Amino acid sequence: MLALVSIGTGTAYSQGSGSDQGSDEEEVGAGSGSALVAPKDPKARTTWLKERLAAALTAHPTLGRAKVGAYVVEVESGKEIFGSNEGAGMSLASTAKLLTSVAALGTLGGGFRWRTAVYAEEIDEATGEVKGDLYVRGRGDPTLMPGDLKQLAADIAARGIVKIDGQIILDTSYFDTDTEPPHFGEQPKERAGFRAPVASFGVARSTVTVNVIAQPGGTAKVWLDPDAGDYVKLTKTEVTSDPEKKTRLEVKEKPAKDKIEIEVKGLIRPSDGSFDRHYRIDDPARFAGEVFRKALVAQGVKIGKRGFGAGVVPPTAKVLAVHDSAPLSTVIREMNKQSDNYAAESLLKTLGAETRTSPGPAGWSDGLAAVRAYMSKIGLAAGSYKQDNGSGLYGATEVSAKQLVTLLRAAHEDYRIGPDLVASLPVGGEDGTLARRWHGRAAAGRVRAKTGTLEKVTTLAGYVAVDGDHQLAFAILVNDIPAGQRNASRAMADEMVDAMVAYLEAAAAR
Image (tube, rainbow, N blue to C red; front, side, top):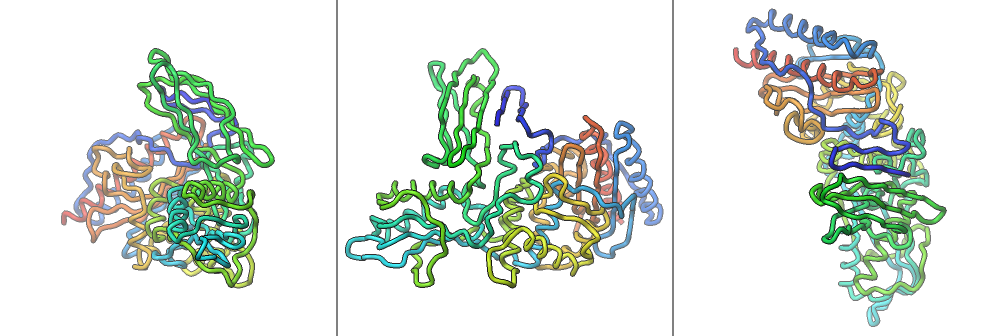
């Protein structure tokens, strides 16, 4: 994988990535931003909104033959306010995370946590030796970080353990061995972190970060985080610093059978600060195991055998240390605010593991079956839509604007789901992937919605409200966008939201 990056100009180029990054850029909408005032009369106000929304759909001729679906309803009553091509199945991109989120909150509950635990069968308390192997069992925690593994290692050392006679055994039986989510294989050469593999024991979202920072004297420091020992190695670093030249760095990631080699060369301008980019690794369990091994060694724990074994924790083993994740409600908040593909795919497979009725590890089909089962309860019949993965990356979805709004209303009506879902959505003009939209406009702070972005797709779905009594649920889906017109599609959506806010302001003023 080759990446050429110019920090000074804010551009990045990745071989093999195309434009389907699957991560939603924070882009400023290009709408007019002029203040809108809707009529006070209810009937005239509704007519006004319909006309404004319809006009927005045709106000950007550069969108050409783009396919657009839009639907708006009152949240409480379900009264339809506006619909255009609302029944057509569309690619959602990352807005598909709404389906994953609602199914997870409704099935697992907001208090669900992932547990990573370390076990041993026999410990010599007098000598501090583990007689045999040390077992690590992962349960799919998408938020597990190197610091968490360091704490597990510290907890083990605090018990007086100084040596492991055997080796570290990785129990990854919660999930099956297929670490590539559906459709991720459509860009097999892409090494960016947004396409990281998923396993029941993974750390740092199964990515390694390449860091570069300028040093005095025209040199630069280059390092990897986390340190995964011999599995991921810097094999060449030829980076200088120069205050007079633009930053230009070249990163080559070379995956091999049992290791990944990374070369970094180029130049960094000190005033540009530091460079950091995330790259996927191919063996999540091995990667996490290496990070955990180094954490144990740092605590003074000796390990008798190198390498890692694979197996299930014996029923007679005793727990030595555990790490519990934050609750699901918190994880979903971070996932949707930042549009985290890794968390969404981990959550999908966790749904499969927690609902699977037959013995054995969970696969992607189990997770998708769990989502379909929940969707059928809230009005989305199996076969009426398509969702092939948890994140919406690549060509994984065909869902209509009306179906999305049905989902949003059902979530709002269920107090076990609605508050956590709303709290997870980016807030227009304030945070997440909507932080840079609607600045200085009435919609700022009043729209909470999930974004979606692919090369020819932009989507937006969520809620608009000005107070607790006046709320709209909406979905605006744009597919087949002509080259270079994604900003125009966002501007169209922004203008539609502006009109909804004006409508609600007039309603609330009565």
